[in-house]
Image 1: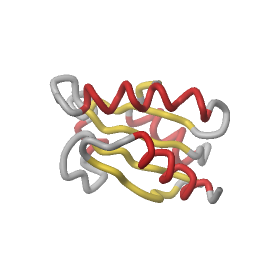
Image 2: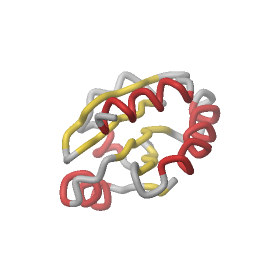
Image 3: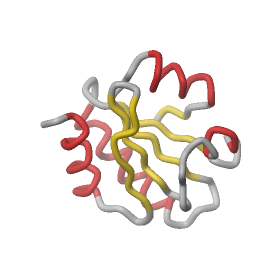
Length: 106
């Protein structure tokens, strides 16, 4: 998963209007260590159709504060430059796949 900073986030989400998910996480988060590998596994299924990105909330505090995150991990889903959904906590692959389908309208 490609890591984003404020500039690359704005370019990816708003300038390119990419359909994608962004996980807001941090290194020492126990639940994140379970969710991130699951997302990395799913990523291959969506190559070229849906982007997968990572933001370290410790390194990008300003970016994390732009969204109403109740904690980490939080996965935000974007399409055409707009926030289309959010999942948080110890999520399952099926939840992510359902949300991606919903965001893409498939």
